Length: 163
Image 1 (tube, rainbow, N blue to C red):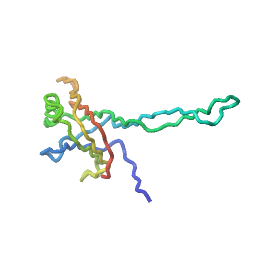
Image 2: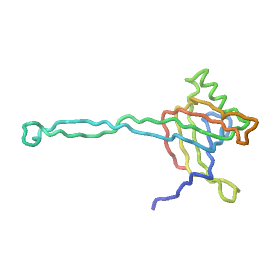
Image 3: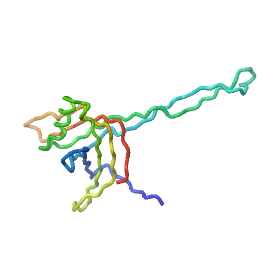
């Protein structure tokens, strides 16, 4: 029987790990948007030798086949921390894009109700990734909100792997 567990959309954290990094975890995030992978549909129209109705024309038949696969960009958000790993990667990508395309993994952990640990729920591996956008929320000395750091990451491919 297949293992089945529902993954909640709250009480979790995301850990980002870049390949060839000296850090075990390069970032911890509270939100991720944009995980999307689509496959184009190519429609082919053929005319068969079968007769179509009362005419002498062949019967048109449409067949759909899979086309190119496309991945969207992801946007990661977190409360700003003292870590500058994301900023350094973004700046390095600006300076030398070709050398900064990295493979990375995003692991979703559930924060257990007793908070004595966390359990791994899902893991995704992204290839050919590089940051396209880095953003901070508006800063205000009068506000009571936490400062939010956001990074948009483009990638070529992703796959879900057994956690």
